[in-house]
Picture 1: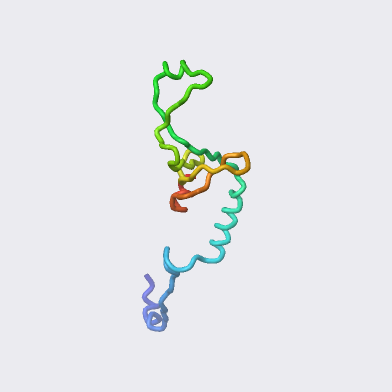
Picture 2: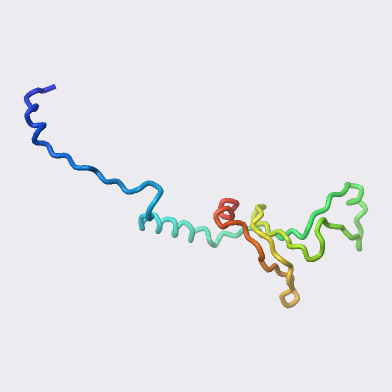
Length: 120
């Protein structure tokens, strides 16, 4: 160590450093633009949407005996909401409607948006 600089220490000035808050406050505009860009890149990706009317548990013997006109009893009552499933993950409930001559689903309940995104 060179002791010849010992007197210069009194001449140095220091000032506090300010850092942006971590995790709180507003997000920098550049980071928000990156997130928007990333989201736009995936918005047109196809996903599988299924609607589950109900379920049933049966033996293989019952399935082997299926024929035209066989009625499968499900675990739901007529009028119960159906489950909406996207890529195998539950995202909400809905009710069956008829649009022209096609079936449709009116969404009545959804999982929290952040949980839906995590589920995809």
